[in-house]
Length: 183
Image (cartoon, rainbow, N blue to C red; front, side, top):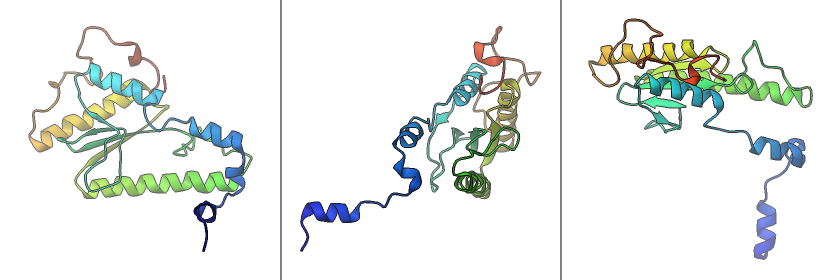
């Protein structure tokens, strides 16, 4: 018979080479999963245009948590970071443990494709923007899909349509309206 302390140590997870480096573990724990600068910029831009949304909310029947969701219009928005979602323009595979990182990042891309397919099968529209996309274009892309969904569903949710795609609802643009989604 084992004691309580022995049973805990027997169930302890095995560590591998990546888990052993305390510095790496500490750095990885500081990486934000939500409320990143690109997400905040896009949220400010959409909010200033009159759109209201849910942040990091699980979609019913899935484990999916889009960065922004508009459940009434069934639109999910993802702001993909260049490194974690393997943007071919900007991602540089780390030299250390490069095989691990390549597998990990390609796995993230496969998961993104599967998530998009699953949501679309369930009747959702999915908008993906890169963190390097110009903010006006990213917000315009999301807003265009929201307006399209609103027309398709015959819903009056959201702000009134504007004459131009980049025309803000207020007379002046906010500080987040210039630059890229990443700021």
